[in-house]
Length: 61
Ligand code: SF4
Image 1: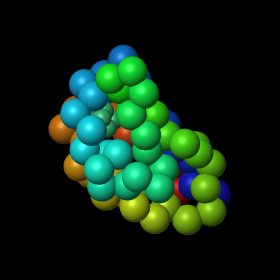
Image 2: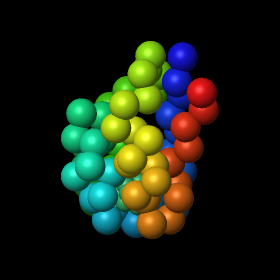
Image 3: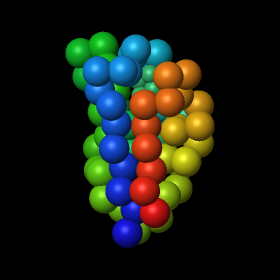
Image 4: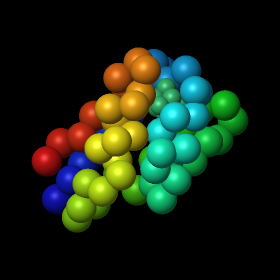
């Protein structure tokens, strides 16, 4: 099981995660949020996390 957490306070709303991984990231009121936080496969969330300029996405495997 993959767990995804986001430090929403730190998110600057750049939209990179939602652009790279629209399957699991959406923009709401100027910040992003994960659609699912528990997944079987990391998928594009890995790229979303590494593209985040403030490193506020954490993936626990
Ligand atoms: S890439 Fe990071 S800073 Fe940019 S919207 Fe996503 S979580 Fe927020």
